[in-house]
Image 1 (spheres, rainbow, N blue to C red):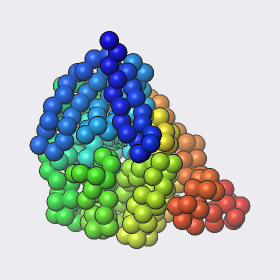
Image 2 (cartoon, rainbow, N blue to C red):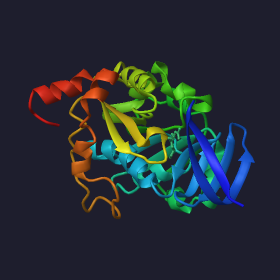
Image 3 (cartoon, helix red, strand yellow):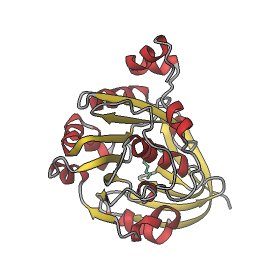
Length: 291
Ligand code: AG3
């Protein structure tokens, strides 16, 4: 008998994946957690029926979310990840040898426990002495921080349920206050194809709290529309231009990120620039300066 998992991407559009086995399935205090072994995407984490991360394409998402801000920052030492309980973002952060402490604050300790047990590819950083795992509401954690972090990353679920607060202006202004001068912020900001209105609103909320905010994208085949956005925000400088390259200060081999991909991730097609109201991006075109 064939078993399939289906996520509703949009009313009228679903994605289905055939499952080889159900690794675990439980109701946590916050959400329903499932880990499947799928035929095409390999191991997959699903929360409340929404695909969070898959073995096949997680490197594209995590390397994009993490390395664009981390290679923009000249010397990131103290990093905060909000969400990201599977560990994929933490794993990537810890590859930067400059990092002395990396906090991962997830509201759901059962996601962290399940990742430790069943998602070893993602959670390999949990045992690193620089890792600080905290089970708490990310907004509350942030509200206590002032000028503390070099980089803050938001690796959240979609803006429904527990993650809704992580998409509000109030949260972005707490993030801007929690960064050191010269710090930078990046968040996953949903699908420019499936939910452009949402991406537009979220981008502009972030942009209202920082002097510089830019949208960048990457293909993530298991997420709605297959194309995903991220927003990076800084207090100055152009985040599309990395200040460092992967070198001796970086551990291991990259699968998606390169300095070239970094710059190109910011190049957006005219329709997205217009639909999302990203005037800065068309100015870049018309000035003839490219990226
Ligand atoms: N966080 C982003 C997941 C969003 C997926 N949305 C969807 N499938 N509708 C993923 C966490 C990975 N560390």
